[in-house]
Image (cartoon, rainbow, N blue to C red; front, top):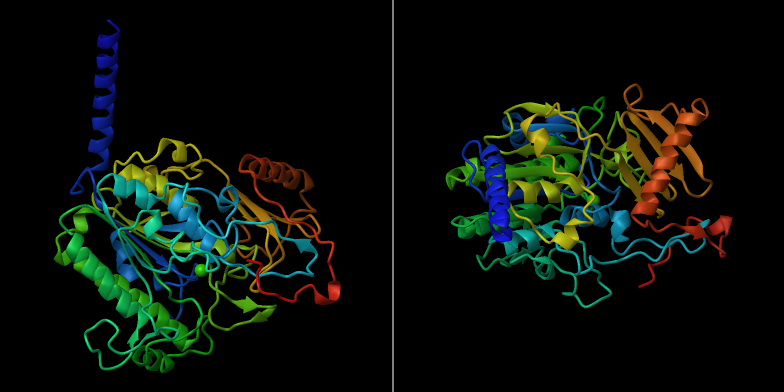
Amino acid sequence: MRRVRWMVLGLVFAVSLLGVVEKLTAAGATKHPNIVFLLADDLGWTGLRSFGSDFYETPNLDALAASGMKFTNAYAACTVCSPTRASIMTGMYPARLHLTDFIAGQNRPWAKLRIPDWEKGLDLSYVTVAEALHEAGYTTAEIGKWHLNYAGRPADKYDAHAHGFDFQVDKPRGTKGYFVPNGTNGEGASKSEFLTDYLTDKAVEFMDAAKDKPFFLYFAYHVPHTPIQGRQDLVEYFRKKVDPNAIHKNPTYAAMVASLDQSVGRILKRLDELGLSDNTLVIFTSDNGGLTQRYGKPDLFTENLPLRRGKGSAYEGGVRVPAIIRYPGVTKAGSVCNEPIITIDYYPTILHVAHVKGNRQHNQNVDGASITPLLHSPTSTLNRDLFWHYPHYHAGGDSPYSAIRSGDWRLIEFHEDHRLELYDLAKDLGERHDLADEMPERAKEIHRRLIAWRQRVNAQMPSPNPDYDPKRATQVRPSRR
Ligand SMILES: [Ca+2]
């Protein structure tokens, strides 16, 4: 009797699962579509032409947006590199992972607050998206910047191989800045090659080799992160087009963005040539906003306007990023989604689309939500608050802070003096008009939710620094390792 009941339950479950599978694979895509995740480094919200740049040229990414879904309220889970990358790999908030700064961080021994003892590597106990996909039969590759291990520890301890990637390629030995030296790829190149082009070759080689089975390509670009260096032909091209009245006007930076765009074009073209485009989920986004200033001085590399500030800061310019998703048969060409999404969402989304369960214990702590309802219907809502927690100082930004976005409200808490700032993004996208004093009740209510979240994820807090010295507060010492 008991056995029959289980069989019936099993049948009901199988039938309902079939319904979900059918819905997700409406056209083209198979049960295990390929996943191509393209991650830019430090590309700000307006860094693409289709996201508002008045100077950069990004025809391939614009075409990707035109053939897929563009997200206008997409966020990185952190205002700097490593924590966002960890959030993509795990689906968890950096605050929960206690991996809250770029590895290995920056130490200011005389600052007002002492930073907590945070994690400088992604612990192997987490089941990354690569591990979950690999387990389900995917071939997995990490091309480019990893930034989740720690130079002070054995090099391979937290590297991409240890986290579920079959293949890993980054800068070859001897690379200077963005230039790969002669002949390192064994093909006797006659001159140095731009790193992005070199890595794109590797990504294409991987797709060619992996095409017969489902694959996961995680291509983490170095561009347009510092050092600001571009391919000479592209720099020359943009130098002639500089408009002093434009918001974006650095030709070398534009060349870096163009290299990124050309690479994406080559990846997408190869998917077409291999006949895989209809069966591939493509995600493009960035790990944090554009770098606009360091130590209070503008860098003049780029701008995130109309957003306030950039990488390292507490404001929207630090975390709002471009995002494009193309899933043929599901996303409608040229569709736009204004619902806020964040990098912790990619883990559950990818697992959902790929019909991969992953590890139950890991998944219990996943903070993100599958955004597949948005891919089907961009006007649906996820009805939730988003959070950031950065208990660190950064050269490009502010003092330690936490923040919450709740509907159109964004509240920031600065930990040095417990100051609250409240903005209405619907009316004030540039966060110019702080409403915390005008609307103390609303600020308090939203602040309560921020505090409750910090407790839920066991966020590490900065503490008063007994060595605080106002005269030396901004001085930097190498990180304690
Ligand atoms: Ca970055």
